[in-house]
Length: 165
Image (cartoon, rainbow, N blue to C red; front, side, top):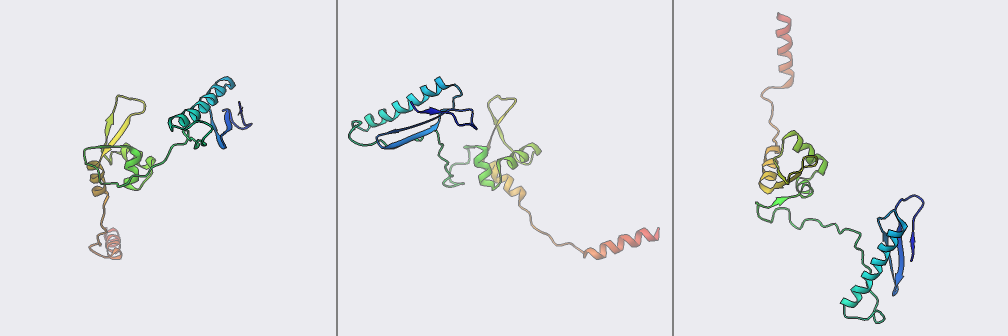
């Protein structure tokens, strides 16, 4: 068993090599016993994958399994699915070109509409439809309009009216 805890971490890490491949990662455990159990499960998982591939453990090495690292996927097309599907805040923020925190600010000020999913009170789960996102984009689209009179003229007129009183 190769379970250890770095000085600057409260979690135990596992690190072992099997059939020429290195397996390492966090056990997400603060107890050594539970960390060793987690490492044992990782070893069994590597063996199980080799068996499912129809190969014995001695025939061919197993490719490393990185279950703990989430794969970050970017949306293929931001406007292709139907408009009645619910969108996550992360997706909505990506489509609007802002951060999820800024999207939350828009929600709190009432600038963008949303649907509450579930019955959470402390942390409500907000979802967005494509129609709501399109409505927000249309509302936020601005056009610079020229002033009807030069700025200097308006200031001069207001100063004259103050002096004449």
